[in-house]
Amino acid sequence: MNGRLASYLRRRVGMQILALLAVLTAMMQVLELLDVTTDILERGQGVSGLLYYAALRTPAELALALPLAVLLGTMTALNAMSRGMEITAMRISGMSLMRLLRDLLPVLLAVAAVQVVLLQAVLPRVEIELKQWWNATTPPEPATAPEKETPPLWAHTRDGAVSIDTFSPDGRQLRDVRLYSQRAGQLTSRIRAATASWDGRAWQLEDVTELRIEASGVRVIHEKMREWQSNLHPEEVLRLGLPRPYLSTMMLADVIAGSRVGSQPLSYYQTALYRSFAAPLGVFIMLLLALPTAITPARATGGGAMLLALTLGLGFLLFDGIVAALGSSGKFPPLATALTAPLLFASIGLWRLRACESL
Image 1: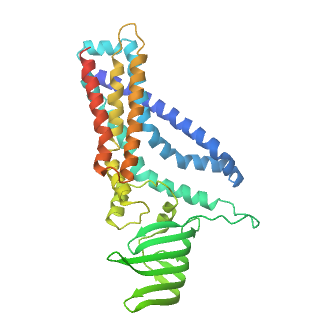
Image 2: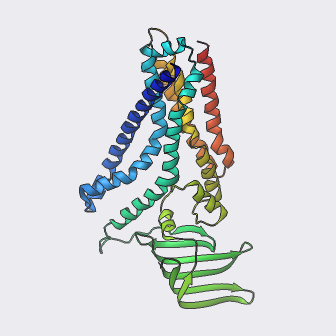
C-alpha cells in the first residue's frame, strides 16, 4: 500500500513540476523573442531563424526555470492534495513529512540529473553555436556609418596575456593581436601581429613585430609570417565576447590549472567550480521549502503557507546570487560562496519540516 501511495505521490508532484517547467520556459521564451524578433527579421532569417534562435536558447531557459518549477510544482501539488484530504489520509496511514521527502527523492534525482546534463554538456555547446550563428548573420555596417570604437578583448593564455581588437564570426580570423610574455613577473616581450589565422592546429601570424627586452636593451624583430602554438582556440575566442560564459566543471578546472584560456579573474573560476558541484542542491532545497505546504489546517486554503514557501524560495535564489557575486569578485572565499546559501536555507527547510511534524 505504501508503495502505491509513494508512486501516486511521485506521479502527482512530477507531473505538476513538468507542467510548471513548461509554462515558465514558455514565458521566458516569449519575453526573449519579443526582444530579439526585430533583430532576427532584419538579418533576413525569417521564421526559421526565430525557431532556430528559440531552440538554442531553450536549454539555458530550462536550466534557469528548473529550481522555480520544483518549488512551484511541489507546493501547488501538495496544497491541492491537502485540500482534497489526500495528505490527511496519507498521514493517518503513518506517512510523515520526512517519509514524504524520502518518497519524492526519485523525482528530485531525475530533475537534478537533467540539470547536470544541461549545465555540463548542453549549455557550453549551444552557447557557442548561438554565438557563431549570431555573428555570421550580423549585417555589415554601412560604409558611411561612423566607425565604432570597441575595447579589445583580453585573455590569459599559457604564453601570457593576449589582446584582440576584432575577430571573424567563427573566431578563426583575428585582427590586431598583441601578446605580452612575462617571466618572474617581468615583461620580457611584446608581439604584435596585424592578423592571425587558425589552420586547425595553430595560429598563423602575419606582419609580426616583436619587441624583445634583453639585458643589452630592447631588440625589435620583424617577420612576415610566424606560427603561434597556443591554447587559445576559435571557440575560446567566441567565449571572450560573452560576459558570463557557460563552462562545464572540467572546463573550469582546466582554466584554473592554466591549460585552458580564461578572461576573468581566478576567483571567478574558482567560485564557479565550487558552485557547479553545489548546483544540484538547489532543487533539493526548493523541495524542502515547499513540503510544509502539505500541512493545511481544516477549512483553510493554505495560501499563507504557499506565500511563505514562495518567499523563502525566491529569497534563496536572491541570497545565493548576492553571495555568488561577492565570491566572483574575490571578496568571499570560493568554497564558502558555494555552500553558504544552500546550507542556510537547507537548515531553514529542515527546521520548518520538524516544526510541521508536531502539528
